[in-house]
Length: 254
Length: 359
Image 1 (cartoon, chains in turn cyan, orange):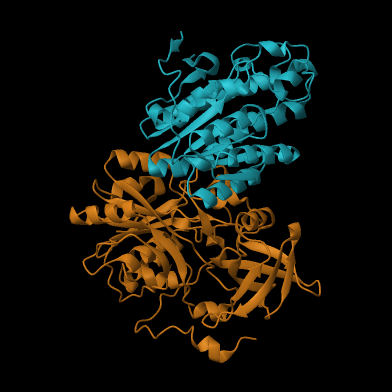
Image 2 (cartoon, one colour; image 1 turned 135 degrees about the horizontal axis):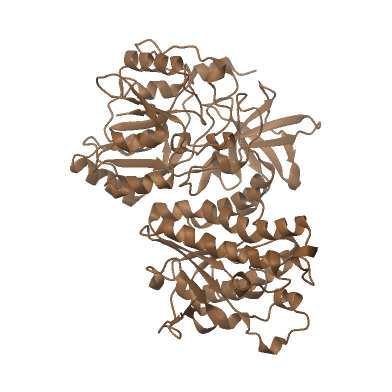
């Protein structure tokens, strides 16, 4: 059952909010960084070392909007990098109010059947898409709980709900991420810290094009068009919303 | 060699009562956190020592709430631990171990320079680290002559990034292997700045803190960035050098302390660092004011505690200055007897060890 929210076109201010967005060098992460900056947030943006040039471009876009920004090159699947990213973010801004676990790994493309997926590839995808968000949330949730407020947003996918062929490792990881969201939400209920997931739907991103090289990109949404639900969940307007799974493209609870 | 005239300034005043003395058997030194033996982080023991009279009670840490009342306030130190041990080379390519002690400015740190356990260092010494990081020794600290003021050629966020990339947590010989930095964090750690973990809060879990909150036990935080607990020189350590440490007490924490005191609740410091910060900020009537700054407050057995009623802490080494601070809460003779009981019962010491609530 889907409940459309009557909030679609309202702008939500993120003034005074500090947001950390992983995987912000391109695609949805970049679009979120720009939109959050536009709404007044201070930003910590992150990507892996192989996307550092693209991360600098995102940083320039955010700076052009006069948003305070810190770029941290780190691999969210790496334990030491997670602690470094956390420490640098907190050193710069004193707190993180909003965490968007957006960084994601697809595995090899063209995407293989599970029977043809190597054990290393499977583990790598789960480490980035499940263990990474767990580690980063764990590292940042404590300072949110200490203040009694904070918002965590996990980027999900319908591949986590439907068993599409060749989307094995990725789909399993997103299903696990959705369940991670549910358990966190149950534990955080009543604390002022909330966690939700968002399925952004089909978007025209480099990742999508790699996963579906023969797909019709004209049918896919631009990442800039699906940011509204993220801004809503990052804002104080969503203070009572916890443990929900949103569909970004029609801003509805799945 | 240290200048004996300079050393004189670090001597501790005669304290008028015998120090607490005991032998700590090496097998009672906690070598790793509970998680590395497959246990929960709160799976440590707790000795509850009544502050004024009564026998110690021996229990598990997760029973902490049994000894707290609605209206009490736990105050924690939320300073995050940095990887404060950096390896460098000097101009002659000799290995130098740099232990960060206190951050003085965006590119300036007070540091301990070691070759093994030997203190080294000289003005003008140039150090090269991994990641292209370089630094120069500017001066010896006149009041703490084993510390050197070091200027990095990188500053601010870039310096912090490199420290994270090349550093490792400061550890002592009882921890045989380097451990991941996240094991040196409390569950509520915020801004980084400590070079050793504010370890009294390490066993606290959010499961327990949220349960205590539901029972009306408050939670507030302050920051005190810890320096080094040891200079690696037993003679200097025995003199209890009086470090200055940076701290900050937010408005809401000062307010929480003052409200609790006014209503007759107890302020329980989680760690000696919290005692130091709150007592620095305490007025004569026991209320505290929000403030930021540096403290050199030394709490001695005869010190009158104004703002703090109880203390959750670890078990401290013989001769540690922390024992002086503990003796401000509880008569030294009773503390000594309680410590002997802990030894007899096989309690574990140090930052990953068992806990003591004095209340």
